Image (cartoon, rainbow, N blue to C red):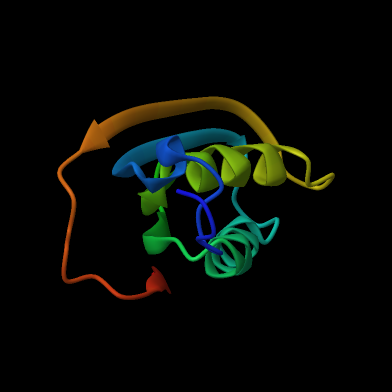
Length: 102
């Protein structure tokens, strides 16, 4: 889409929603707030929360390229160690406008 400031390619406009379970050293290391700031900067919506079993659960929605960039950014944080990220595509939430931390 030539001239559009928000999308560099047609693929970037493919909005999707991912449900993700992260495991590893992902609790008590600032994972949720780091995710919040990355998602906010990437204009992603959704939410993130800790689970009682030590994993972090997250839903994030936005352009596929932004979701991929989020994964690269979060994996690059030195105090976070993601051993596994289980990702499934789920239905969009059209009315969602922000990213929340629970």
